[in-house]
Length: 500
Image (tube, rainbow, N blue to C red; front, side, top):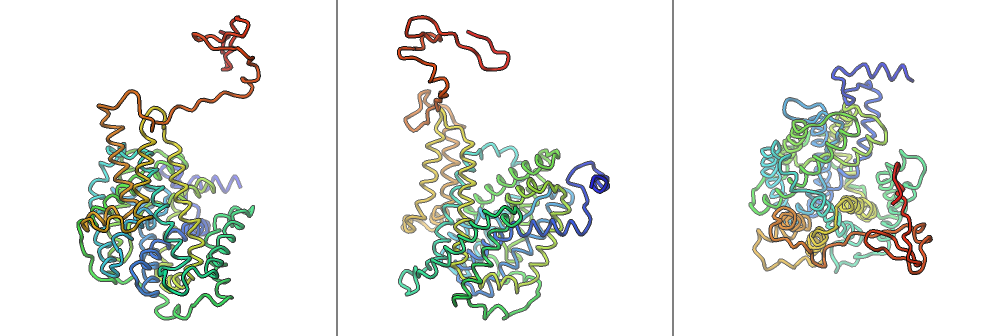
């Protein structure tokens, strides 16, 4: 084992851990594992957007195939790279969840016209992102955890109604609305995910969502709730048809809304590049970050030509690198090749599109909930003592969730305003960015004594300290005075500490 390891280690002409070559067989195996880990995440956005646009199951299959194909190309660009493009780190690319809620607001019942608006907005916003990528390291300070945490949390919360509608249906007047059988199928799928996650085998646990989708679909088919009759209608293998839904259209409000998403994607990808660089033990400087961001934006700008959406690094695959300790970017590049092959098989996309929506809803509870949990984890890193971060988080998340709870809240506002603020993620992001600037950057005029909304420092006293105190003991002028009036000696518990 040691000898084998040494032989591969020698294949690093640059001396960087990520340049290790594992051989074709192991690279394909590890690359496939990366694809399986992110498969559920990459097929969800085209399913959501395609369903909202009201396109046919065959066209949803086309969208899924396109997203797989473009994700593979973007992964190769990011991992292999060429001058000025690609971080050359083990990062898997795919359709970003960050844009789903905003794209839903743009589609907004406009069908195929809404879909072409999405494509146009993605192209222009991504080109702007491509231009600002080299300078983003300078403005990333305006996107601290208090902002990114709000945005990621809002993404998850904004997507939860999608999972709900997958389970109960979109039409409250329909006889099948909230059918207990569909709710049962969703619950069964969710139970399978939980049970597989509990399994001691790490590989099975990581594939729990994909396996649950398969098991849930089989269960639905056995009880007569799955229809695969249209799966075989169409080509088994086909190159993605450019502009299959028509030429992109360009709406200013949609572009502005998507530009916010692009800023979020730039922030997330920057964090992923830094994280994976630390994991593999490789130096990551601003030049390398800029190259990675350019790869993100270039692939995002090109993706609508092939009927796909914004591209970004997948955080779950960064975690997979940490778990498996396989740091080779060539292994991830092999995963990109697998994605391209899958994208050339629209048959597989139609199979996914034929899955009962209740099965997808059961998986969506975990999938979208995980996004929310990731945002909460980011917000846990925020310091709330003696500042107004608490009110920033509270206000931004509340404004972000309003259009999800009351969809018609902005119905009497101009259309450009609705496109931006009917999206939970856009409205939350705008609010968080503005309030962060007001309270944390333009600090002139801030009160030295924050309002009641500011969180007070948490005070904690260990129980072993409480047990030695007696009734009447008190702390006076920096000294602990006992009930008998004598000063109690305080011993510093730090190494080398002294008594005082």
